[in-house]
Image 1: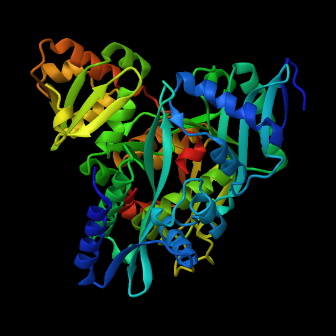
Image 2: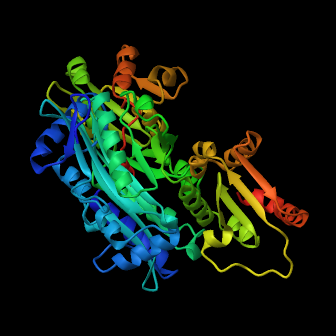
Image 3: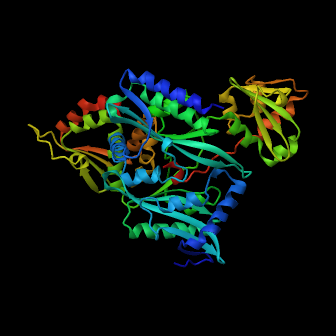
Amino acid sequence: MSAPSDVNVRIFRQEDLAQVITLYDKHFAENLGFDRSEGFLKHFMHYPGVDKNSVFVTEVNSKITGFAVVSVTSEQGGLIQGNVIELRINDASSMRVLIRTIEDYCKKKDVDTIVLVAPTQLGTEEVLKGWLKFDTGVMMAKQLSLSSLLRALLSAQKIRSSYAGRQVAFRIGDEILNARITLEQIYVSDSNDKAGQAATQIRMSPHTFLRIALGQLNPYTAFVTRRIKIRDARNIVPMLRLLYMMRIAQPIYTSLADRL
Amino acid sequence: MISKSQVIYALSKTKAQLKGNELVIRSYKPGDEAEIVSLLNICFGDWGTLQKWEALYPEYPTFKETDVFIIQKDDQIIGHEALRFRDLITDSNISLSTVSLSDAATSPNQRGKGLHNKLVNVMLQAAKSRGAGLVFSWYLRDSALHKHSKKLGFIEVKQPPAYMKVMRPQKLLRTGLLDFLHKSPNLRSELEGLNDLFFGIDESTFSIDQLLDRTPLKSDQDQGKVLIVFTERSLSTLVKFRNMTKRQRLLSLISLFALRRARITFSSFGAFINLARKGLSLVGSI
């Protein structure tokens, strides 16, 4: 299973797991995605239709650069489908080699269609020329626990360093939470906590907050259109900048395994 | 944050509300599996096997028995939906606890009674009490669940598209049609009345009888054959069909015929009249 370039492709071995996790860690340093700790990766490798010959890795100079898990399933009407349930690749050359290997494997398994979600920014269009692009469904999101969401969104390093020592109250719908930002940690407490009460209060609806958090609404626009109200702040610009920094970048990369 | 006692209160309140209708919402317990899989297969067509359900739920890394919810009526499972907890790792390597809703199913004869709504409310409260900051869900565009999720405050999130390589176009067309007919019972009953209807991709064709796996219907009078043939180039549109709105589907079909990526032929004038008679109801049920 060697390729014309420096990229080598082979079947995954147990001892590759640490390197595969490192591959994901590298991805998470710059991108958003669901947890890929050991438990999840092992789970995907034991999913129905996956066997030990359908988990592939690519390597360059003995360093793992790509990982794919293929599940072959029988669908409605007898359609045999090759589902690339997990795909993580570092570079376009590895992707080209890995996709070719997946195609060869699926041909041997006599599959009728192959489906995958390609990582973004890797020259996907060029590598997957001749493949049909489609949507598997609409991904929808809703806010649940405000304290969990605030704690995670405020924990970004750039926020902790820029806003250390600040306290802000968030009134999202009927819920009021005080957030205290320090260099090390974010403390979120409910409005009954007198000691933690903040002078500045940012008020908006849960819908507006969710749209800001998911990067779909600019806080400056929301403020001008009166969807955000800020109370007792000497200068509203830092508060709006804080909301802007809290957003989660999109699109969220979701593999087929995430969508199952 | 909602406390556990509030969730128990909500659950008992829902149970009490439903008790009048002999319905109970409860967590999954071992022994329910076969009945759940049977319900999913009724609701989704060929959903899959017990092995698939076990891989998706009990074997999921964060699984707890309280993650799967069912609605029971007279000791029979008539509803199912599950939570899957997983962290979202943000760009700064920070974990946000999230949950996904999956495999929402209500028995076809129990739909329209607001059961799913009650189930989702209980599930979202349970997920919130366990500290999930966001809930995600995947729906077919324009489906009843998709529309309902917007009313519950869900908003659409961008995700990268999927890609498909087609090795055998005919099998894909067949599966796509079966899946679509399962979701559109009205269209299925309209098509069932057509005796000699054939579908095809380029040269290879199959009949409606073969598609529905039934013995050919006998008619008093032979009305002739109707053949709908798609070209391979139409597949790029057809694979998106499932996730389109009704309007988009109709416009796509019209454009396929206009661009000659699909054609319809009638072996006789009788066949044309027969299809034309059903025309409006067919268009309405697409």
